[in-house]
Image (cartoon, one colour):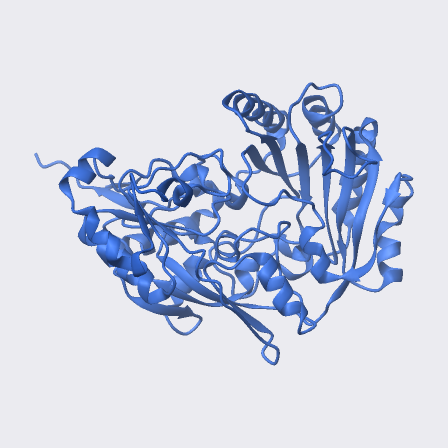
Length: 480
């Protein structure tokens, strides 16, 4: 017999779902914080952070506690609906059609606590990274946040989580120590190394396929300053700087995590005057260690004589905005790959596709430095123990209109195709904002284990995730 991955079949359509089920029964849930199609607040409630994604669920619920999440899950199952959890909606695109789905928006669940003695923080499902960074900084601590202040802690953590200390301390997912989860059966459980250990393993890297995470606990670290900043070069030097940075990054110590970017800076007042309307090349990141150690590490990049150098000792709390990612709802399209290397041919191809003179509409083409602890299985890791590759490629364009979206997506795809010959066989799913083969986000044995657990905890396919892990379907031999 053979096993083929299958996604559980959704309901026929939104119209048939609405006409055959008493969706009004949902209105009394969450203290009335539920929006159905046609309600005045439905359009605002259904809109994700990436406003280029037009998601239209059967209902949107705003629970304020794990108990309310459990009520929503049980009610949705009773009505034959499915459930998708969403905090901010940064990576909403791959969710697909939501006609028969109750969208559980967790933004009302915002509690953050810090245990200084245990070096552990606890965040409820709707907490943003800026809230955690602020809370732990008050205790002289640092969290493994990402590059944007308004990304949700939960989605980031369940999908991996690569921040400014990742090459030394690993992914955020593998520093999660416990989770509170509403299972597809509607039960509230704790998952950690001792309780529900298989679920604990799966959630740390397996995304939203196994239930609704309502809170998580994770390690924080006892330091509060780091040597960090930007090196800025004119866009005309893109190939030169990329050659130097890619060669340097291959031998850089684990204590440094950086990114290289081509930025096409819009000519708007919000942008710093020295960069406004220009194409620039930026190397930004952080070096853990003393100032002297950091200066020695950065010396080869400083030898390229950047026009601006902001690297200095600064509070780790300031790094939440180091990358200057856009904040607030933003219409964007993108493409992303994991790369084995960046030889000269790859550098030339990328600069030709996205650099000065390429005609690209992208606001950025970026490479994030992998390796170090990211390339070695973390002790006690979850479903994503490491990332096989040296660089994470990301291309982003603005999608303010359908025409801009089409052009930006074409340019992002063109840039990704330019470096695709050096792609690994894996994706980093947190940055895959288009539908991809989810199996390529995991090692083969881990993916099979995830599928087996999905079949066990969610045989009816209640949960909807942006990167779905389907259950294996067994084809019985035909009787003769």
